[in-house]
Length: 238
Length: 292
Ligand SMILES: Nc1ncnc2c1ncn2[C@@H]1O[C@H](COP(=O)(O)OP(=O)(O)OP(=O)(O)O)[C@@H](O)[C@H]1O
Ligand SMILES: [Mg+2]
Image 1: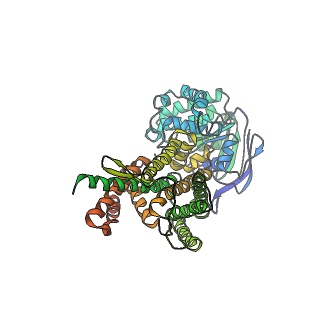
Image 2 (image 1 turned 90 degrees about the horizontal axis):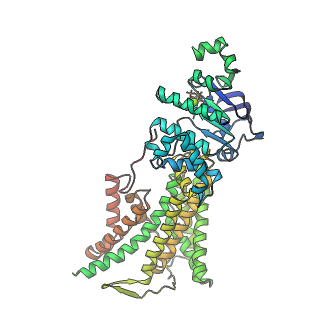
Image 3 (image 1 turned 135 degrees about the vertical axis):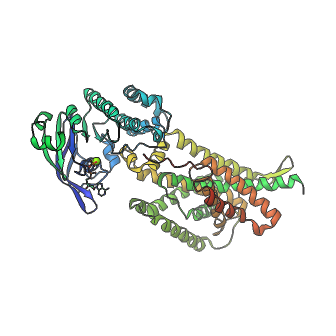
């Protein structure tokens, strides 16, 4: 569903990704782990078009999308929930969710009706969001904002979701809650690329995992394989 | 000095103030999506007025002139966005400030060369006869100004708050990158806001011209006051600009009546200084919600 081949990307003149290759099969959850500054966020940004890759290919459902604008790539079925959540602070929770489905809704009138089903699904997953649907997103707690960011990505009904550190800055209890949600998404058949600091938990939900070091994939394999790799155990699972 | 004269002065001034409000609203529209404004907005008002006058002189009926003028304003707004704003915003620079000022200067000399320096009357089918409301006389033209301003602003406010595209405006303003990730093209949204802003400027020109006449300098005083209104009201409240616009217009008219017309510009400038010193976010401005 998502194929990244020999991707090179960076900021200005500094190259961060030096030939990243990874694959996410339809209906699978793939974890991308690695130390701070390894280039995980940069990988996601290059996939979703927030930065333009210098070379390499990104295929979404077989179609090359590298070099397209972020809004084009989103229209083609990629949802990226970025690092730091980035909800629309002044807008209400519900407006944030509606905008998540922007590509599927009429621009002027009648969009509420068309979005009702999707909204109900997201509210069923996150009852807390329903309670706060009219509140400004910027005034939600960190955990609630994360739920909103995930819900907003789901609203697009995308082919692939990229989740960049959904557990960042959350209390341990809430982190477990977030992983439970990821598990439920997986059961419902969502295709997911997940970047996580909590490597252990990430490997518990993932079907496959990549370990990134200095802009490259250093190790890859199923969670069981990684659990037997001494280097990985020492660096990330210790 | 009797109450009727005071009321008369206040009402005429207030109606004038609604035009300041409409121009200020044009600033708000582009600020809302891009945090940039067109410093040549006054020239846009003036150019659109000249263009509309030319349409009338060519024999176009009044309603066609209004449509043509509004389209011209929208087109000019798009030109400003493409030529002066887009690249600067992409590079996250403040270059649009200088470029839009230059656009204004160019527009000014273009108008002088094409239409000449003289002020010209702008015919209107609406009567300039005074109607009497409880002893206060208001002309049909003045009523047209009030109705036109409120109608245009009302329609655009409905669009901003009730349509998904309007919410996309707010999303681009809150977080451009995140909006792009939702599939919202920030560039197109900003283009649209400049187009709307140009249209609003043209509307202001068409409404005010029958009262003031059309000339290259017609907007230089207007724009300063519109700017004061925008700053005092804050750059995000449509309701705010109307209230402040009306107050400023009334205040000006009363000042020039009591202190002499030389003092006419004083209230606007005083209000501007006061606002910047006391409420930099505007009286109606929301305190910024800090991103977490
Ligand atoms: N906007 C930017 N401009 C310049 N350099 C950047 C920018 N963002 C990231 N970098 C650099 O790119 C490298 C990789 O950063 P990236 O954010 O991709 O790491 P990461 O793996 O997501 O780390 P973390 O786990 O801390 O989120 C770092 O060396 C960082 O300094
Ligand atoms: Mg990161």
